[in-house]
Length: 282
Image (cartoon, rainbow, N blue to C red; front, side):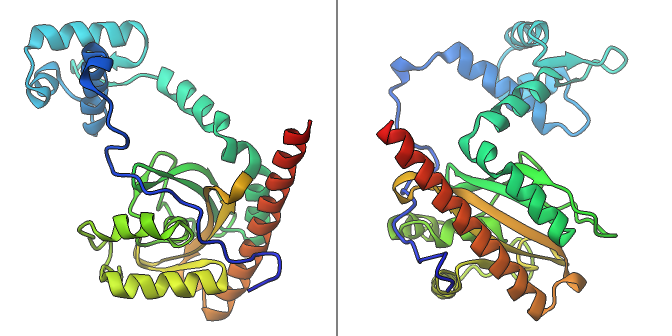
Protein backbone atom coordinates (compact mmCIF):
# COMPACT_ATOMS: atom_id res chain seq x y z
CA UNK A 1 0.00 0.00 0.00
CA UNK A 2 1.11 3.54 -0.72
CA UNK A 3 2.65 5.53 2.13
CA UNK A 4 -0.08 8.11 1.62
CA UNK A 5 -2.80 5.59 2.44
CA UNK A 6 -2.15 3.75 5.72
CA UNK A 7 -4.62 1.02 6.62
CA UNK A 8 -7.46 2.23 8.83
CA UNK A 9 -9.79 -0.18 10.50
CA UNK A 10 -11.74 1.52 13.26
CA UNK A 11 -13.70 3.93 11.14
CA UNK A 12 -17.31 2.86 10.93
CA UNK A 13 -19.94 2.46 13.58
CA UNK A 14 -22.39 -0.40 13.94
CA UNK A 15 -25.92 0.68 13.25
CA UNK A 16 -29.09 -1.28 12.77
CA UNK A 17 -31.34 -0.50 9.84
CA UNK A 18 -33.79 1.21 12.17
CA UNK A 19 -31.05 3.32 13.79
CA UNK A 20 -31.45 4.45 17.40
CA UNK A 21 -34.85 3.70 18.89
CA UNK A 22 -36.94 6.80 19.51
CA UNK A 23 -39.98 6.51 21.81
CA UNK A 24 -43.26 6.86 19.91
CA UNK A 25 -44.33 9.61 22.30
CA UNK A 26 -41.53 11.79 20.90
CA UNK A 27 -42.66 11.33 17.30
CA UNK A 28 -45.32 13.26 15.42
CA UNK A 29 -47.74 10.75 13.94
CA UNK A 30 -49.00 13.36 11.47
CA UNK A 31 -45.50 13.91 10.12
CA UNK A 32 -44.95 10.16 9.93
CA UNK A 33 -48.15 9.80 7.89
CA UNK A 34 -47.04 12.60 5.58
CA UNK A 35 -43.68 10.91 5.07
CA UNK A 36 -45.45 7.63 4.32
CA UNK A 37 -47.54 9.43 1.70
CA UNK A 38 -44.39 10.83 0.07
CA UNK A 39 -42.82 7.38 0.01
CA UNK A 40 -45.95 5.91 -1.57
CA UNK A 41 -46.02 8.67 -4.19
CA UNK A 42 -42.33 8.14 -5.02
CA UNK A 43 -42.85 4.39 -5.46
CA UNK A 44 -45.12 4.86 -8.48
CA UNK A 45 -43.11 5.11 -11.69
CA UNK A 46 -45.86 6.97 -13.55
CA UNK A 47 -47.38 8.57 -10.49
CA UNK A 48 -50.01 7.23 -8.09
CA UNK A 49 -53.73 7.84 -7.71
CA UNK A 50 -55.40 8.84 -4.47
CA UNK A 51 -56.93 5.38 -4.20
CA UNK A 52 -53.56 3.68 -4.77
CA UNK A 53 -51.88 5.75 -2.05
CA UNK A 54 -54.71 5.31 0.47
CA UNK A 55 -54.73 1.56 -0.13
CA UNK A 56 -50.95 1.30 0.24
CA UNK A 57 -51.07 3.15 3.56
CA UNK A 58 -54.29 1.51 4.79
CA UNK A 59 -55.95 4.87 5.50
CA UNK A 60 -59.21 6.39 4.34
CA UNK A 61 -59.24 8.40 1.12
CA UNK A 62 -60.45 11.39 3.14
CA UNK A 63 -57.38 11.37 5.38
CA UNK A 64 -55.11 10.67 2.43
CA UNK A 65 -56.62 13.51 0.38
CA UNK A 66 -56.08 15.96 3.23
CA UNK A 67 -52.43 14.98 3.50
CA UNK A 68 -51.93 15.17 -0.26
CA UNK A 69 -53.62 18.57 -0.43
CA UNK A 70 -51.24 19.91 2.21
CA UNK A 71 -48.21 18.44 0.47
CA UNK A 72 -49.43 19.84 -2.85
CA UNK A 73 -49.79 23.28 -1.27
CA UNK A 74 -46.16 23.04 -0.12
CA UNK A 75 -45.10 21.87 -3.63
CA UNK A 76 -43.82 18.58 -2.26
CA UNK A 77 -46.25 16.69 -4.50
CA UNK A 78 -48.15 17.74 -7.59
CA UNK A 79 -51.27 16.33 -9.23
CA UNK A 80 -51.50 15.74 -12.97
CA UNK A 81 -54.93 17.13 -13.93
CA UNK A 82 -55.44 14.87 -16.94
CA UNK A 83 -54.81 11.61 -15.06
CA UNK A 84 -55.40 12.52 -11.42
CA UNK A 85 -52.08 10.92 -10.53
CA UNK A 86 -49.71 12.38 -7.96
CA UNK A 87 -45.97 12.63 -8.34
CA UNK A 88 -43.21 14.23 -6.28
CA UNK A 89 -43.11 18.01 -6.64
CA UNK A 90 -40.28 20.13 -7.94
CA UNK A 91 -39.60 21.46 -4.45
CA UNK A 92 -37.85 18.13 -3.85
CA UNK A 93 -35.29 18.95 -6.53
CA UNK A 94 -34.47 22.15 -4.67
CA UNK A 95 -34.35 20.47 -1.27
CA UNK A 96 -32.33 17.51 -2.54
CA UNK A 97 -29.72 19.80 -4.06
CA UNK A 98 -29.46 21.77 -0.83
CA UNK A 99 -29.14 18.59 1.21
CA UNK A 100 -26.46 17.35 -1.14
CA UNK A 101 -24.42 20.54 -0.88
CA UNK A 102 -24.87 20.83 2.88
CA UNK A 103 -23.38 17.39 3.47
CA UNK A 104 -19.76 17.90 4.58
CA UNK A 105 -18.34 15.25 2.29
CA UNK A 106 -20.00 16.77 -0.82
CA UNK A 107 -18.40 20.14 -0.15
CA UNK A 108 -15.02 18.52 0.36
CA UNK A 109 -14.94 16.18 -2.62
CA UNK A 110 -16.51 18.05 -5.53
CA UNK A 111 -13.21 19.35 -6.92
CA UNK A 112 -11.56 15.94 -6.65
CA UNK A 113 -14.50 14.27 -8.39
CA UNK A 114 -14.28 16.63 -11.36
CA UNK A 115 -10.52 16.18 -11.51
CA UNK A 116 -10.82 12.39 -11.55
CA UNK A 117 -13.51 12.57 -14.21
CA UNK A 118 -11.28 14.65 -16.47
CA UNK A 119 -8.35 12.29 -15.93
CA UNK A 120 -10.24 9.04 -16.51
CA UNK A 121 -13.20 10.09 -18.70
CA UNK A 122 -15.35 7.80 -16.54
CA UNK A 123 -18.19 8.25 -14.05
CA UNK A 124 -17.25 9.36 -10.53
CA UNK A 125 -19.60 8.56 -7.67
CA UNK A 126 -19.70 9.74 -4.07
CA UNK A 127 -21.47 7.54 -1.53
CA UNK A 128 -22.09 7.59 2.20
CA UNK A 129 -23.32 4.93 4.60
CA UNK A 130 -26.94 5.47 5.54
CA UNK A 131 -28.93 3.01 7.65
CA UNK A 132 -26.83 0.05 6.63
CA UNK A 133 -26.76 0.84 2.91
CA UNK A 134 -24.69 2.93 0.53
CA UNK A 135 -26.47 6.12 -0.52
CA UNK A 136 -25.26 7.90 -3.66
CA UNK A 137 -25.07 11.62 -2.90
CA UNK A 138 -23.20 12.91 -5.95
CA UNK A 139 -22.26 11.88 -9.46
CA UNK A 140 -19.96 13.44 -12.06
CA UNK A 141 -20.31 12.23 -15.64
CA UNK A 142 -17.34 11.22 -17.73
CA UNK A 143 -16.59 11.79 -21.41
CA UNK A 144 -16.19 8.15 -22.45
CA UNK A 145 -18.14 7.17 -25.60
CA UNK A 146 -20.35 4.85 -23.55
CA UNK A 147 -21.45 6.12 -20.13
CA UNK A 148 -23.00 3.63 -17.74
CA UNK A 149 -26.34 4.49 -16.16
CA UNK A 150 -25.72 2.47 -12.99
CA UNK A 151 -26.02 4.37 -9.74
CA UNK A 152 -27.73 7.75 -9.74
CA UNK A 153 -27.98 10.41 -7.04
CA UNK A 154 -30.40 9.03 -4.47
CA UNK A 155 -29.74 5.38 -5.30
CA UNK A 156 -29.53 3.07 -2.29
CA UNK A 157 -27.21 0.10 -2.74
CA UNK A 158 -26.02 -2.93 -0.77
CA UNK A 159 -22.62 -2.66 0.87
CA UNK A 160 -21.32 -6.12 -0.02
CA UNK A 161 -20.66 -5.33 -3.69
CA UNK A 162 -19.65 -2.54 -6.06
CA UNK A 163 -16.85 0.01 -5.85
CA UNK A 164 -17.77 2.73 -3.35
CA UNK A 165 -20.25 0.57 -1.39
CA UNK A 166 -17.68 -2.15 -0.78
CA UNK A 167 -15.04 0.44 0.12
CA UNK A 168 -17.39 1.73 2.82
CA UNK A 169 -17.86 -1.79 4.16
CA UNK A 170 -14.22 -2.83 3.95
CA UNK A 171 -12.87 0.19 5.81
CA UNK A 172 -15.57 0.24 8.48
CA UNK A 173 -14.92 -1.21 11.90
CA UNK A 174 -15.29 -4.92 12.51
CA UNK A 175 -18.46 -4.59 14.59
CA UNK A 176 -20.24 -2.86 11.71
CA UNK A 177 -18.98 -5.49 9.26
CA UNK A 178 -20.23 -8.27 11.54
CA UNK A 179 -23.65 -6.61 11.68
CA UNK A 180 -23.86 -6.25 7.88
CA UNK A 181 -22.75 -9.82 7.23
CA UNK A 182 -25.23 -11.19 9.75
CA UNK A 183 -28.10 -10.18 7.46
CA UNK A 184 -29.35 -12.18 4.47
CA UNK A 185 -27.32 -11.01 1.48
CA UNK A 186 -28.73 -10.97 -2.04
CA UNK A 187 -27.11 -11.23 -5.44
CA UNK A 188 -27.26 -8.08 -7.56
CA UNK A 189 -25.70 -9.96 -10.50
CA UNK A 190 -24.48 -13.53 -11.05
CA UNK A 191 -21.01 -12.34 -9.97
CA UNK A 192 -22.10 -10.95 -6.58
CA UNK A 193 -20.39 -12.64 -3.63
CA UNK A 194 -22.81 -13.39 -0.79
CA UNK A 195 -20.79 -15.91 1.24
CA UNK A 196 -19.65 -14.10 4.45
CA UNK A 197 -16.34 -15.96 4.56
CA UNK A 198 -15.52 -15.00 0.98
CA UNK A 199 -16.58 -11.41 1.64
CA UNK A 200 -14.27 -11.22 4.67
CA UNK A 201 -11.39 -12.34 2.46
CA UNK A 202 -12.30 -9.62 -0.05
CA UNK A 203 -12.31 -7.13 2.80
CA UNK A 204 -8.81 -8.21 3.83
CA UNK A 205 -7.59 -7.89 0.23
CA UNK A 206 -9.23 -4.47 -0.12
CA UNK A 207 -7.62 -3.17 3.06
CA UNK A 208 -4.23 -4.48 1.92
CA UNK A 209 -4.34 -2.69 -1.44
CA UNK A 210 -6.16 0.39 -0.17
CA UNK A 211 -9.05 0.32 -2.63
CA UNK A 212 -11.96 -1.91 -3.55
CA UNK A 213 -12.66 -3.56 -6.89
CA UNK A 214 -16.20 -4.22 -8.04
CA UNK A 215 -16.08 -6.41 -11.14
CA UNK A 216 -19.63 -6.76 -12.53
CA UNK A 217 -20.87 -7.63 -9.04
CA UNK A 218 -23.29 -4.70 -8.67
CA UNK A 219 -24.20 -4.03 -12.31
CA UNK A 220 -23.46 -6.34 -15.21
CA UNK A 221 -20.81 -5.10 -17.67
CA UNK A 222 -19.65 -2.44 -15.17
CA UNK A 223 -16.34 -2.32 -13.29
CA UNK A 224 -15.60 0.19 -10.53
CA UNK A 225 -12.87 0.88 -7.99
CA UNK A 226 -13.57 2.65 -4.72
CA UNK A 227 -11.62 4.33 -1.91
CA UNK A 228 -12.70 5.71 1.47
CA UNK A 229 -12.64 9.33 2.64
CA UNK A 230 -11.85 9.99 6.30
CA UNK A 231 -12.37 13.04 8.42
CA UNK A 232 -11.37 14.09 11.91
CA UNK A 233 -10.47 11.30 14.29
CA UNK A 234 -10.35 8.73 11.51
CA UNK A 235 -14.13 8.88 11.10
CA UNK A 236 -15.24 7.64 7.71
CA UNK A 237 -17.19 10.24 5.77
CA UNK A 238 -17.90 8.06 2.75
CA UNK A 239 -16.24 6.71 -0.38
CA UNK A 240 -15.52 7.74 -3.96
CA UNK A 241 -15.58 5.39 -6.93
CA UNK A 242 -14.42 5.52 -10.53
CA UNK A 243 -16.13 3.20 -12.96
CA UNK A 244 -17.08 2.38 -16.51
CA UNK A 245 -17.96 -0.42 -18.88
CA UNK A 246 -15.99 -3.66 -18.65
CA UNK A 247 -14.02 -3.28 -21.92
CA UNK A 248 -12.40 -0.09 -20.54
CA UNK A 249 -11.12 -1.88 -17.45
CA UNK A 250 -8.60 -4.60 -18.07
CA UNK A 251 -6.53 -5.81 -15.11
CA UNK A 252 -3.79 -3.25 -15.67
CA UNK A 253 -6.13 -0.25 -15.83
CA UNK A 254 -8.05 -1.43 -12.77
CA UNK A 255 -4.86 -1.34 -10.72
CA UNK A 256 -3.70 1.96 -12.20
CA UNK A 257 -6.99 3.76 -11.61
CA UNK A 258 -7.35 2.12 -8.21
CA UNK A 259 -3.94 3.33 -7.08
CA UNK A 260 -4.62 6.85 -8.38
CA UNK A 261 -7.93 6.96 -6.57
CA UNK A 262 -6.46 5.54 -3.37
CA UNK A 263 -3.70 8.14 -3.25
CA UNK A 264 -6.06 11.02 -4.12
CA UNK A 265 -8.55 9.93 -1.44
CA UNK A 266 -5.76 9.59 1.11
CA UNK A 267 -4.44 13.07 0.31
CA UNK A 268 -7.94 14.54 0.66
CA UNK A 269 -8.42 12.71 3.96
CA UNK A 270 -5.14 14.11 5.26
CA UNK A 271 -6.20 17.61 4.19
CA UNK A 272 -9.55 17.25 5.97
CA UNK A 273 -7.87 16.05 9.16
CA UNK A 274 -5.41 18.96 9.04
CA UNK A 275 -8.24 21.43 8.46
CA UNK A 276 -10.18 19.99 11.38
CA UNK A 277 -7.10 20.21 13.60
CA UNK A 278 -6.49 23.84 12.68
CA UNK A 279 -10.14 24.73 13.31
CA UNK A 280 -9.87 23.05 16.68
CA UNK A 281 -6.84 25.14 17.56
CA UNK A 282 -8.59 28.30 16.43
